[in-house]
Length: 383
Image 1 (cartoon, rainbow, N blue to C red):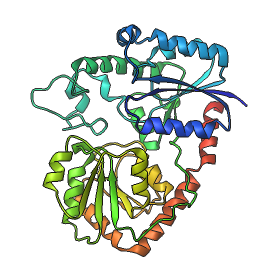
Image 2 (cartoon, rainbow, N blue to C red):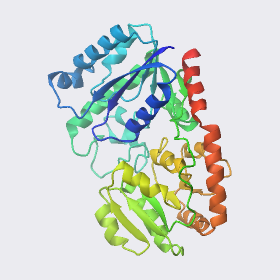
Image 3 (tube, one colour):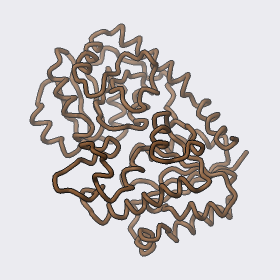
Image 4 (cartoon, one colour):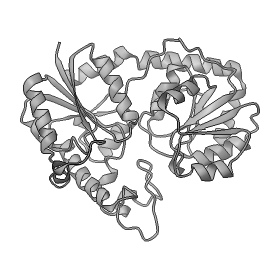
């Protein structure tokens, strides 16, 4: 068996990318001698971290990597997130060792931090569908982090260097779907460097059978303007669907405002729940729904729903269609909320919902099964 080193910089608050990394470790450890090298943004900043913001080279992180390279001697290296503890210096170090390296890009924000000027970021749009930053009167600087100019400057410096490293170093860049690959090419990454590797879907064991008679559907995620939660609530309340409640899980800057404006017997606001509580509620739902305005990569909540064979209502936008059958009936036209209202009507047809649940589960288990992931991963390093 080959030796595989997986590198990841954990986010301060655990999110979908962290969970996906854990899933891939569980899948790949049966096929490789696997070792993990983890960096933690939750750790207290030290002197080397502050220097790294300016030099793009974290001495402590490099030392950790060098020790692993010398002791483990990996044949393959698979990288996920590097911001900010991991840092860009690890790529320079890896270049000196003749090892196959691949990095997975999970979202579209790698392009958002390349610009000092907001107008160059937005390119005449009112807001960015990748990171949700909005055009504002008198704002000139591309302030990626609302709470800090300094963090935003560091991110811009980092992103410019990171993009250069991706393009110039001998690294395989992994996009999670065809749409994502297309965007990478548009942003200036050579097509020859890009290959596809979806995030693994959790495979259904049919332990949790779909309950078509459930009396609720679920939205789970951030309660923000960019996620289209207000439009979702307005459309749901205006629809003539009866006997069903929309359970809203999550928190965000719009939660207080929306919970007051859209107070209704058809909506239940559950606030922020932990991951297991959220999964338990999803597993007993009739459907999950999102009306996001964002370019989503491969939303984690899709995997959680599919594990329990729960139908998903989503806007046809970006690369999301790629995870569903061509004739899937619960997708709606992006920004067309009459289309969403029409889609809601399908929730009243139990026979149709059961059929959609079976077909969706069969499709994912056939097209995105564990064996498909293994073969796709092995192909990356053999090409």
